[in-house]
Amino acid sequence: MIETSHYLSSSVKDLKPSGIRKFFDLAAGMEGVISLGVGEPDFVTSWNIREACILSLEQGYTSYTANAGLLELRREISAYLQETTTVQYDPETELLVTVGASQALDLALRAIINPGDEVIVIEPSFVSYAALVSLAGGVPVPIHTKGEMEFKLQPDELEEAITNKTKAIILCSPNNPTGTLLNKEELTKIASIIEKYDLLVISDEIYAELTYDEAYSSFVSIEGMADRTLLISGFSKGFAMTGWRLGYVAARPEFLSAMLKIHQYSMMCAPTMAQYAAIEAMKNGKEDVLHMKKSYKQRRNLFVSALNDIGLTCHVPGGAFYAFPSIQSTNLTSEEFAEQLLKEEKVAVVPGSVFGESGEGYVRCSYASSLDQLQEALKRMQRFVQSRS
Ligand code: PMP
Picture 1 (cartoon, rainbow, N blue to C red):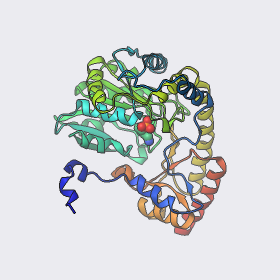
Picture 2: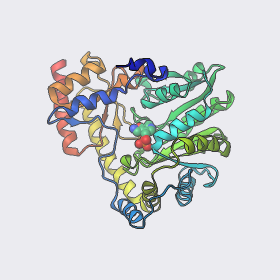
Picture 3: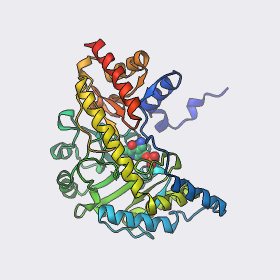
Picture 4: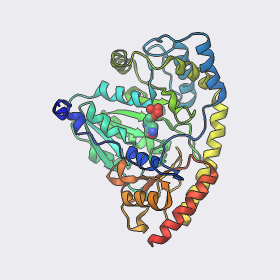
């Protein structure tokens, strides 16, 4: 027997496992659980997209693609981004197709971080940000946004968090786990601080397609920001393609070639068959996206107003498919709430604390479930909340 831990990298040893996984594992061992825990669409990928993949296999397209991805796909993504953000990205030098938005985030951080560089993470946030910053040798610096402000980043809070070691900030709008959407005016205020302190932005816009009231504003569409932003997006959420593992990053050529260097040694290229499917998603997928968006909006309206009715105060999330209600009326911590709700009523939600300190007092519920399931979950949650008050 060897002392395994002696051989492990200390940066990995210091990393905490994702708090979300723990709840999946707990719920997986139980029967009759309604899961509002998973962060993925409940739609199956549209048939035309699946068929494009099958066709590519029939044609024998099973080799590697160019490191940056199929040029045809990059051209489609470039046209799509021009339409949605108004910014032009050269398919040859400014776009890289990745293994999910997850890999795009990892590449972006590894390409810009020197040891000790600080990267601002706006919490509550997607669980991977702080971990990926640390793995890249950087120091994640959290900003704790507040429920009373619908978890919107306030410009003065941003300014206070900046030091002479700050290299970049990670923005995510619409946000996971809060569903918070920042509008053009709010993004413009953030942009002026970015400019003032000469920072970079990693803008995670993976939920861009899923906004319900206000139009989506991309950070890169704010004047001057495209040059200092690494734009992350992909197919997982809007196009219901989580399992295909396909995303992309768009950035000015110097940033892109730095990321491409890492990508060509560590990944070679994103999966070929998924890239063929993604071409079809870009060409003919928009109508289905609108259909899914309409359905999420209907569910959001029902779910969020019912949460407020049962005493779990919740702002109306402008995008993504998450509600982030306050559970403070129950006097439980978010971890206790999630554990007891799962054990007693078999509803799985994620404790807000896993998304950072300011997530405490809240839980994340994904409403990407059928209306029947949502209604049953609400009934159970109401019973649970009443038993605690
Ligand atoms: N960013 C955010 C904010 C997410 O919520 C997720 C998925 N949960 C990702 C990135 C990763 O997406 P992908 O499946 O494309 O890797």
